[in-house]
Length: 453
Image (cartoon, rainbow, N blue to C red; front, side):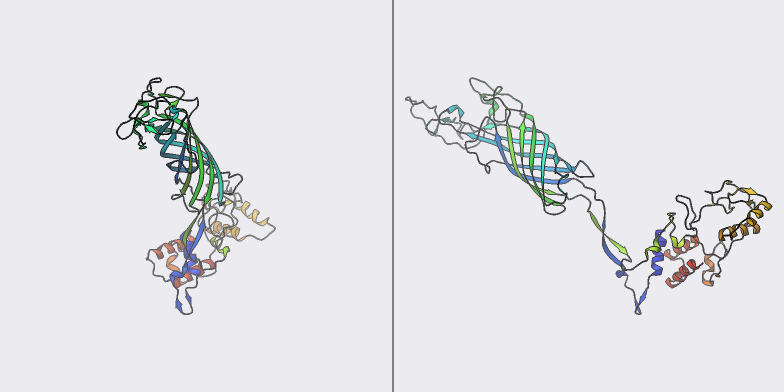
């Protein structure tokens, strides 16, 4: 039917205008076809600052001061219909550090730095119940779980291996502070090189010993921020996430198990970040296609199929066929025993050839057949007349009032004086296969004759 529709449209188009040949390119036009796009994973990269929260505190605290961190994220919608919830799978790498100074409690002069890596997953809610998906600014919140690895080290000696001793006057020397008493002479000032060279787990403290703890843990990240839409496939975010870890060993200061004792409670850190999101793989919401004959104005009735039997009304010889009844290529209900009663009404499916039947397809005597006709109070319909003539003549069929033109007689393969729909389809196939000696004007004439039968 698709091929026939193309041919019929081709035949009905005016191929010659103002004495000039038609430009085939003018029959094409690009249009947007709206589809339901398939949303595939969105790739994101985040860049921001990490700030540690634990027993060792930075003496200088400011929002713009921290260690650099980078996160790679893959996001996809959890709910495919409404797109309210998103699942994020991420990997983060960065550094955490703290440098704490005290002039009164010299044992509180502590520092550490650690590389930190995490693999995590979280669920994100973008308030889709309240805010439209295409809004330029959308808030979000996240909650998840992640696995972290760390390796805490400290800057405890200088480049020559001299241990740092912090004095109450604020200086760092190679000998302990005498505490106002005459101290050992010859102490030399030292300067921190901020090279975190010492594994803090192996740094011995005479009171607490070594801290051989596990440097892996789980963490619970909670985040919030704003998405800013740039285009349908790109947007950026400003956000912050708080990572509560299930370990107290990030800074090597804990209530127990480390070489330096601290307070009860777990360590945590904050990640403040800018994120760029790229939707590179999702299907487009619209797709540009080339439609033939886009400039032609067709009558929609030409493509109607009122009874839904997949035979266009212009070619349907039996309009009004009940829904889901099997039909032939002319749109007429199938009649397997050829008794002129369609199968869906036939109560006798295998009537003998030439038998007399009633309107239910059941075999009756000739007298009963004539009696049924004589009892009618209205004129006989064309279909019933065909049935009657077919019965009394052994297959006679009413023919078109028009004779088949000479140039089309070879197309009437069954010789019934009628160009059927199947014969027209075969002609179409021969034309497209270049096996038919018929030009485009001849096809148009054949089309006119077919619909005039």
